[in-house]
Amino acid sequence: MLIKVFTDKTVSETAAALQTAVEANHFGVMQVHNLKESMAKKGVEFAHECLIYEVCQPKQAKKVLDANMSLSTALPCRISIFEEDGKTVLATLNPTMLLGMFNAPHLEGVAREVENTIVKIMNEAAAG
Image 1 (tube, one colour):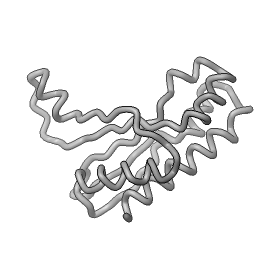
Image 2 (cartoon, helix red, strand yellow):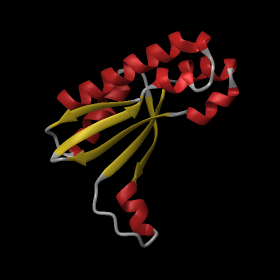
Image 3 (tube, rainbow, N blue to C red):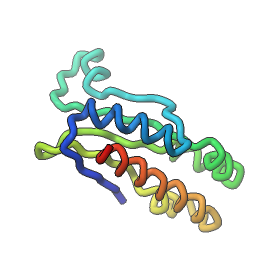
Image 4 (tube, helix red, strand yellow):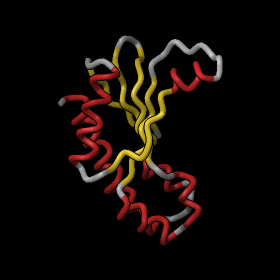
């Protein structure tokens, strides 16, 4: 259910590379959530770096939403960057498995394309 890619880069280096990879693969970053900062604003101390990127490819999103508006609850796709066991991790929920929760087999091709691109983006960010 979870796809993880590991890198020796720092969280901030990975974040910069992710931004570039997202754009190079014709996706867009809709929002970035910095959990450490958000929790601090609420008075909660949180020691871990964690950035959550909301990414989208509008044409793919339209195909999914035209077929089933309930899938809006699973959009946009998210890629998290965090530290785990001394490594920086990029992680996302598997789009094809997530789609399976909605009983929409006719959208599997779209989900597979999105999944392949997101994995490519994560690998490029980890390496580049």
